[in-house]
Image (cartoon, rainbow, N blue to C red; front, side, top):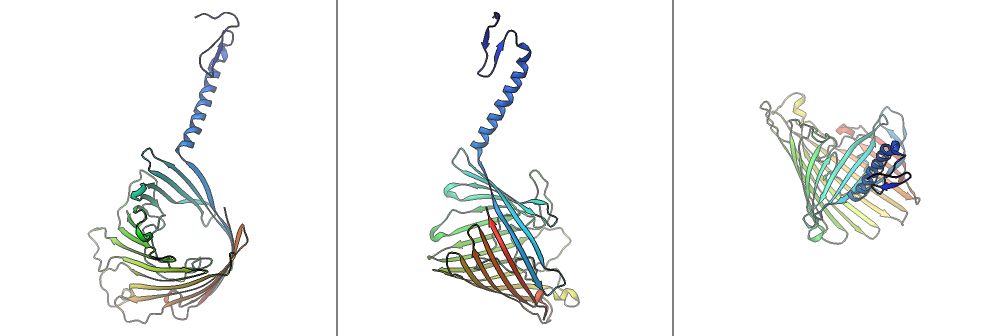
Length: 370
């Protein structure tokens, strides 16, 4: 077809060719392709899933006695990026990644998980440094935080967790069963840590299995339990007398403005050959921890709590006297609408199971959620 002077022909909804404007045709085509690709990318992103961001920002003042250090003042923050969508067969998927500040200020991409929702058949999870099923704190009713899990290390030894930092797990979670019951099974590929990006080669080491149960038989009552066991990697050179295992159980009951909790956790570390003399004779055979907590909501804005924890260390091959760690904590939290002001005080006795090694800890925090 030949064009007359000034005549045009439409080749696509985007491209108009003029006999006397052929020099701009290639530029027009390139621009059109770029616009088309960008439009398709945006359309596919919306159809694939939605991305949301939430998190917390917290300013804290930390005062501690019992050690040679200054008081702490700082800001902590955590961003949680989540995305979700639906598969062709009706299953759902969700992705979560948390950015946590490191000690040097840099943000770490650590707690990550992908969850495939199987509708009435429950869900499957692949997790890195996330998806812990440990119930060691399931009894806690503290107004602000678990005071045995702060920047001060009092030395309590708890059972392990398949979802601990630096580890990778694959998990199955049942749908909600009668009495609000849920069960989970987790397999940890390597307790030493294979928390790497995709297509990475794993390393050799002990793996672990973990099982957890949560049930709510009556209104206000929640019963929780978990058990984990380490699978020994047979390297042909070690002879363990005891493999690592542990677990916890807890109950928490809420009635009106009052919540009470009670729980126990046990941890048996790995032990090598039996030694009856010297430093190795003082290796711990197991740790037994007990927790009790009561929380009271004075009104919609004000909450107070009291918590007590005790930890007992039992030696394997020594009659040396052991001293239990004891912790008492009183906490107050007050809602200011867009923020929460919290004050927490804890007294510790026999830190690190050492007689008369006592400490006190006070935390003042202002927390903003978004």
